[in-house]
Structures are given as C-alpha cells and as structure tokens.
Length: 129
Image (tube, rainbow, N blue to C red; front, side, top):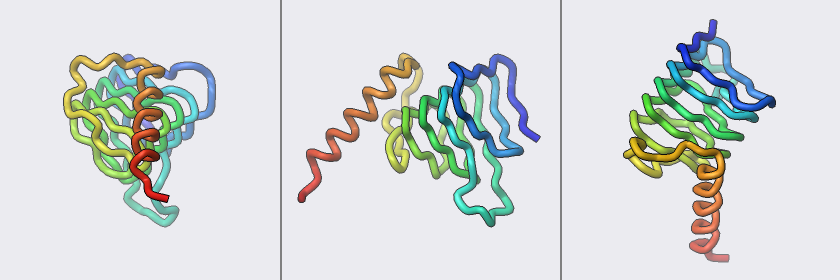
C-alpha cells in the first residue's frame, strides 16, 4: 500500500506510475510523466522511499529498490537508479549528483529542464566521433 505525507502535490494532469508500496514524505511535488518502477521484474525487495520536501520534475524515472533523501530535487528526464542523500540536486541518465546544496535552489520545472539541456550539450561537446 502506498503512503504519502501531508502537503503532497501532483502538479498538472498527466501520466504517473507509482509502484505499490511506495512511501512519499510530506510536502513533495511530482510533475507529469513520472515512472516509479522496478529495475528488474523479478525483484522481491522493491521498496521506494522518498523523503520530505522533494521535487520530482517531468519525465523522471525512479527504479526500485531505492531511497531518496529529504530536500531532493530531481531534474527533468533523469533516470534515478541509486540512493540519493539529503539536500541534493540530481539529474542525467543515469542520474548523478549535480549539487549537494539544495537549500537555495529555485524549484522551477523550467530551471530543471535548463540543467538537463546544459548537461546534454556539455556531454555532446566532449564526445569524440
């Protein structure tokens, strides 16, 4: 059975798949096209725990088993496959820590999309063809 804390907010209409048994803390926000599922269909331990005050942007995939700390922002389009500590901003495929200080970050979807675009552009510039 899923559980959510007070202040949970689903932003905008759209698809969201949340694996049964997921626990979401208080004051969390989830945007459209978010998938919370298993890394492997045969997993028995497939818990997903999301802390308090988390922001999950559009198009995020979170794969269990996983624990996401408090005050975490997950950038648009990120694929989160490993535990995330408190107070982090994560993004990318696979997701990596972009900042370990989430205290003054503006939690706007447009800003998160900007970070993903910048990350992708930097990655393309570094590739050798």
